Image (tube, rainbow, N blue to C red; front, side, top):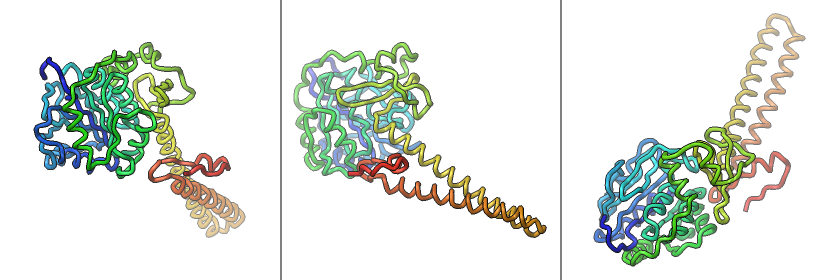
Length: 352
C-alpha cells in the first residue's frame, strides 16, 4: 500500500450467526474496482470453506489470509479457523491468541488492530450475529477516527450483534443489506479523516491478541479486579468499562463482554444439570437392579429400602429434568437471554 493520501481503504467486516448470506450479498454488490482492502472475520469451526464460498459471489478476489503477507487493495482476506486475523504495519498477522467472547477468530481483535494501525482510514462493519462481538471493536475504531457501519437489525437474520453495536456505539451508518454495498462504495471513495491518537488501552488489547505481551502488570492497567472467574481458564477477571460497554479480561488474555460471561455461565449450568440428571438416573437404575437381586435372594427388607432409594433418585432426576426444560424455555432465540437462575431462585422470568 502506498504512503500517499488515503481514502477509507481498510474495511473490516465482522459477522456471526446468520452472517454468511449477509457477507455474500455485500461482496456481490461491491464493484471489482473498489479501492480498498477488505478483511472478514466470521465465527467458524475448526474447518472452513468461507473464502471459497465468498469468492464465488464476489467481484473482488477472496482468499484465506496468510501470516506475514502484505496488504493489497482490491482484495478480500478471510480469517482462517483458530487464528485471530490482525493488521500491523501494512501486513497481516495470524495469531493463536487468547479467545475473545469464546471465539477465535474473533471480531474485536481485528477491529482493534485495524484501528491501532490505520486509524481514520478504517471502516468497521458489523453484520448479523448473536451476542455482541464487534461492539468493543467498533468503539475502538471510532476512538481512532474511523467510520462505523452496522446492518439494520430489522434486516439481520440474527439481530443481537447489530443491536448491541447500535446500543453502545454512535455509528455512522445503519443500513439494510440491499443498500450496504452502495454505502460502502461511497464511504471508501471519501478521503480518510483525521486519525485520532490511538488510546493506550486499544494498543494494549491489540498487543494481547497478537501475543506481543503478557503478564499481569500491563493488563492491570485495563481495569479493576472483578469478583468473577474466567469461563475459559478460571483465572481472575479484570473489569473494563468501555464507554457504556462492560467487559472483562483475565490475566492470560481471554476477553468477554458481560453478556458473553453470562452465556458461558449458562452453558456451564446447562452442562452441570445434564450430568446431575444422568447421575440420578444411573443411581436409580442401579438401586432397582440391586433390589431385584436382593429380593431374589429373599432379602426383602433390604430390597424394600433399595426400592425406596431408587424411587427417590428417580424423583431427583425428574426435578432436574424439569429445571432443564425451564432452562431451555427461558432462552430467547433472538436475545439469548436466559432466566434459569431466576427460576431456580423463585424469581419471575424477565423475558421480553
